Amino acid sequence: EAGVAQSPRYKIIEKRQSVAFWCNPISGHATLYWYQQILGQGPKLLIQFQNNGVVDDSQLPKDRFSAERLKGVDSTLKIQPAKLEDSAVYLCASSPLRGAYNEQFFGPGTRLTVL
Amino acid sequence: EDKVVQSPLSLVVHEGDTVTLNCSYEVTNFRSLLWYKQEKKAPTFLFMLTSSGIEKKSGRLSSILDKKELFSILNITATQTGDSAVYLCAVGVYNNNDMRFGAGTRLTVKP
Image 1 (cartoon, rainbow over the protein chains, first blue to last red):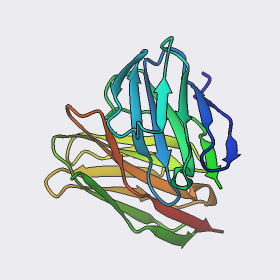
Image 2: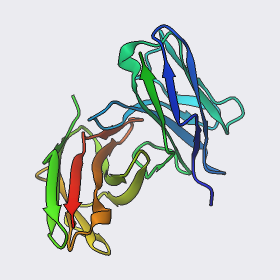
Image 3: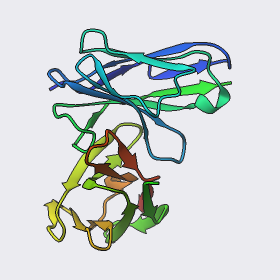
């Protein structure tokens, strides 16, 4: 079974630039999550999708972050404009079950460095 | 505010040692506690605990939950260098679409 795929694996940008991350979940997984993991901290949930609908985005900084999952499969997370404090690993996870309290399958992440 | 606290933050042991990692939590409407192992970047699932006092075991790893004292432990016996990783504890709650992670315990196993 193929795992969660993410790209790019690494990205370096200047502050105020824009960046987008892509995630392809495990086939058949209806629930998709985006996390931000700052160095030395645990992952922080940004947004949760159920199929192509947003279940919860209360921790997403909506002034600069946006995410979509148009056809209920792939998802993109965008930051525009980026700030220095956005430097982190962005993890995508998926699950066949609804509810963030269940087991999730994580992708390899994208390491973002904002200079 | 919901809190998940892991201890110790880091640990260095030698192969063959036994280690115990701790996770304490303060959340409302507790639903589950999960342990993940994070090597490089992607966390991989180890255990999910929902009931007190029932040990979950997988090879040399085991974990148990105490819902009265609000903590869980992860034990690793006969450690190997391949156990070196960050171990993350996460707590999920009912009626809340969030999974709160602790900061993790970085385990280093030396040959």
